[in-house]
Image (cartoon, rainbow, N blue to C red; front, side):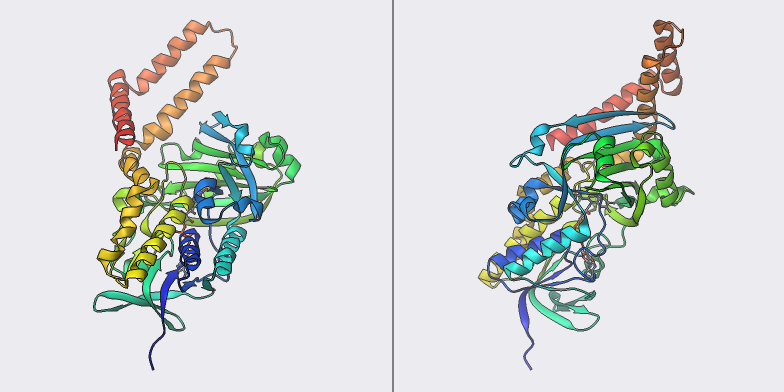
Length: 437
Ligand SMILES: Cc1cc2nc3c(=O)[nH]c(=O)nc-3n(C[C@H](O)[C@H](O)[C@H](O)COP(=O)(O)OP(=O)(O)OC[C@H]3O[C@@H](n4cnc5c(N)ncnc54)[C@H](O)[C@@H]3O)c2cc1C
């Protein structure tokens, strides 16, 4: 019996897989998406924000019908000490207007499902509850996948199975993930009445705010905290390099509990009801840890390809774009009936020409720098900012001049001027790298 061969099999119905599927389906190609979850998004974890422009490239005007929570109008940055903190925010009212929306918070279980439905409407065939166990290779070329139940043959396979990609390992692209190349993200979703969220976060209508947090219980650790506002819940979490957890005795959920108890965070979520706790890995290694992106008959997209910009907490946009470009490369290959690595190299070229690879290249040295200097970046300097403000606002009978002298004296005791100049040069070098690459 002749075996059935479809144009493309996509593994994983996250942002990368679904973007690939809808792009292929819209151009009339046969596409089957295999997803292990009960439904797309059922188990997927993220912090909270999808970005309007790249998302609208795949789902035009999605905000009119998709299950979005809030449009974000403000981003706050919090530097936390043990019991104090400095918070600065950037708010832009334009981001509250259609045509200028920058990002939205979404709940993945609802959002991914909606996205998958759009792909189905375009003609993609999505098969949930199907765990892909390995790639099928013939003469070194990928020709399909094996699931727990059956085999699926395809002219091209797009691997979009997320960070701990079994299939990228199977294809020989990835060795085991290195602890320093991934962060462990833990988060809680806390239910609060909408009016409380409006008041506590200074919000109107369906506008929302994002927090990026440095320090607090994560002082000296390579990690960041985050807060996102949904309509009637708040997401609180953190992502810390897995290598930090290997070297420290603290457990991720203990760190999260301490984070929630910090005086800057606690009042924001007080009295809320815990709806959900989840944990997930985040690719953190960036450009330097990317596997090869294509081979004969196969391409790798999204987290499976380590495409995350962790400085900006951007992952879904890179996943969507990589899925789209992989699909476009597949469409070209299907039209010329040529599925070799050479033909699929178009995928890498498209990524190189886009913000995806340009950003990853710009930031390629930042993580290494942050890893080596986490004690000063996540400890010393944030603490000094807080100490400065404490001195600046305190009225305690001590003359201001004496206070500033004592502040400078203490700062220098902990870090000498040559060391600070050294820090500045290192910052400037990495910063220059970001601008020049
Ligand atoms: C705590 C945390 C916070 C984050 N916050 C943000 C944020 O605010 N904004 C942002 O843009 N990004 C954020 N990210 C990153 C973002 O979630 C990812 O970059 C994005 O989801 C990657 O999409 P993907 O499609 O590549 O992978 P995933 O979303 O992981 O999707 C992979 C899919 O493949 C399926 N799958 C896996 N293995 C198999 C298999 N063997 N067979 C069949 N199906 C399989 C999974 O069930 C899943 O549906 C965050 C991540 C974490 C962990």
